[in-house]
Amino acid sequence: MSSSPAAPARVTLVGAGPGDPDLITRRGLRALATADVVLYDALSSNDLLDETPAHCQRIFVGKRAGCHYKKQEEINELIVSTAREYGHVVRLKGGDPFVFGRGQEEKAYAEAHGIPVEVVPGISSCISLPELQGVAPTSRGYADSFWVITAHTRDGGLSDDLFRAARSGATVIILMGLGRLDQICALWDAEGRGELPAMVIQNGSRPNEKCWVGTVNDIAARVAAERDKGPGIIVLGETVRQHADFGAYRAIHTSQL
Image 1: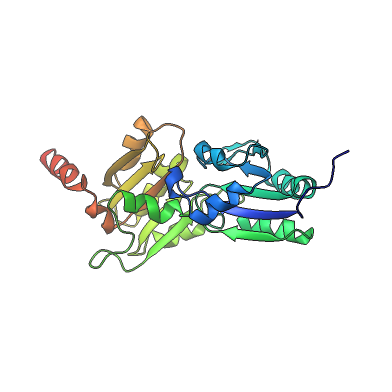
Image 2 (image 1 turned 90 degrees about the vertical axis):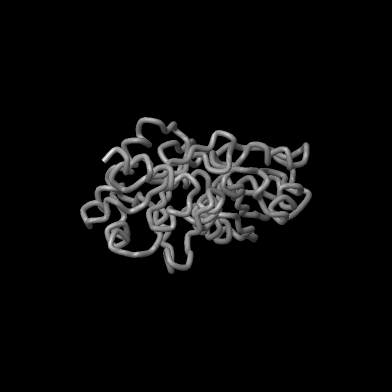
């Protein structure tokens, strides 16, 4: 039978950032330093586990598109049970907990069971990874706004917002969509936007990062031939012209016409 925790049960949802462990916030590091249990997913850097105390239990719960080590319902229950048994639980999530991270579901479940929850926002991949490539999601003369969309709906179909976004002049940033890149590009091409600049970033901010620039009508085949199984984002819009490699891409593409 477990002994009562030294401290009251509580949960902190911490955004780990896009991958580079240096991109977590100071507040996130302070939470890890006082954790009795950390539940971490496949998108947060394992280096961050070194920031936890020696007594801290580290439990992998593996949330990644196409690779769910535990179901969301199991994670919710584990958050509550470990908080009651051990005290302070840090739920460490890649990016920001509330940007397609289901953090609100975890927060609501813990609070419904009487456990207080603190939220530590994280740097989302949707803005940080384009920025690290020198591409601003919004920029004067390129785009006045940006959309952030998930490629997957609950029933496994494409989001209706993708169809709307294909007609927008905004920068469109798509998360969890690499497996459907060809379908997504086909939507833009069907709107007569096959020459729109496009960028794909995989394993962003990590040592094994890959980045492709091109246009809607050619990038999907190149990415499919070269990408691995890591997470990635898709950026569609005129702002991709700001990437340092886009000029060279256009020069090569034009010479082949």
